[in-house]
Length: 85
Image 1 (cartoon, rainbow, N blue to C red):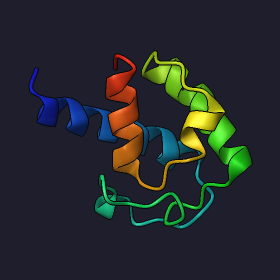
Image 2: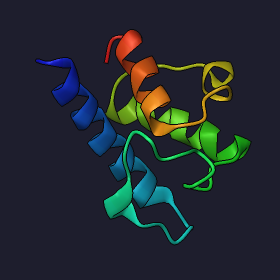
Image 3: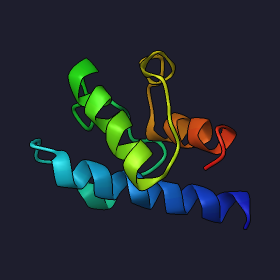
């Protein structure tokens, strides 16, 4: 599988996870690698929920300290790919 299609699949999975759990009114059609964590309203508590959901859906365990340094969806995707997604 090419890196681009893998990224697109993971972005779709993240969108599904976030769309399901989000209380913020978000334009999900504009959700992409450049979307910032701030844009989707994640804080430290919702990031912990996201990590649990990522492990359940994508099957990759990430540490909170890895994700707390991240500022965009694309950075999360890169981290997931580096961890074997």
